[in-house]
Image (cartoon, rainbow, N blue to C red; front, side, top):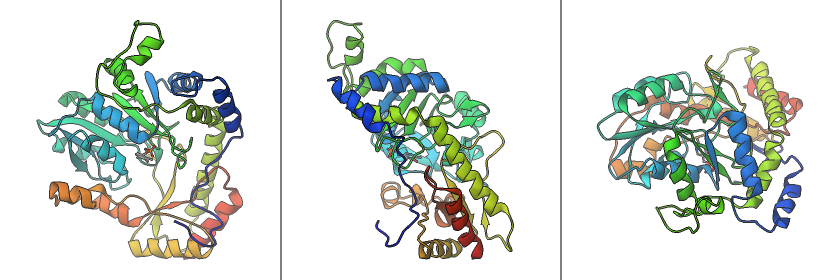
Length: 379
Ligand SMILES: *Cc1c(COP(=O)(O)O)cnc(C)c1O
């Protein structure tokens, strides 16, 4: 989408300065395909910093979710519970295996899924719960993990937005049986297109590597564990090249600095917009006490979609691009055709109509944030 006269875009990918340097190094090693030195550096970084059991870089979060669906052995007719207010890939990865998607509503106070409405959706066909940590803010994982263990279900964390975020001190992505991260250029840490599958349940470790390597036991072969490799399972080409991993490594080296800066920007938004100037016609984001803020996103929730539209137009007239977010998946044409579904998810629909995301990227400075908030408050 090209909008004339936009001076403050919604997102600007941030470069740390070392990306090309590491890419050159990767190219000069002569092994540019996947699972080389930089891939292993990235895996090790995540495993040691966040306590993830095993990490596999993927070419996207979408791919990581598809790997999760294969690993859980999702079969046609199996049911998977997830929020409707999420990105297409959360559901699509499981639809590809033939699953029926059962949507749960968002919370009243937060766009994340309502943990207390999950249990009533479980049937004898339910196989898994996919939680989405919306805006990088944790779902209440104690509730989810308790439901899952009592009903013998698997939990996948769609942690696409949730790098460097915690639930009661535990890193998001380390709690579910599996988790998927995104390093798309719109996320906090990025490599253009990229992602990662986290395997916390050891029973999936071996098979994950095989699925990752086109259904072959090539990884075990390169470690010298077997003397020839072959086709042993289904799989695909899920691993990124060393060029991608080298780019990502340059970002990881600066993760703390990136997070510090993003949090500063987020806090400036919060400070400026909480100072009451006349009547408030929007809500600010809520971070529950068990969660933490990784400053992935700053959003406003308007009372009416008409108010949101006025705000978008006012910002645009001042050269600022703000954008709304998901159209609830249960209202998508694909899902409606597939399921002839009439279920109402009123909170999810409400956030589709009334939530607005503001520009948030490393290079945004405090003056620009104050300029943006002054326009919002002038309404
Ligand atoms: C960004 C995102 C994805 C998709 O990530 P890709 O790396 O682009 O495949 C999936 N789920 C959620 C919640 C996201 O925000």
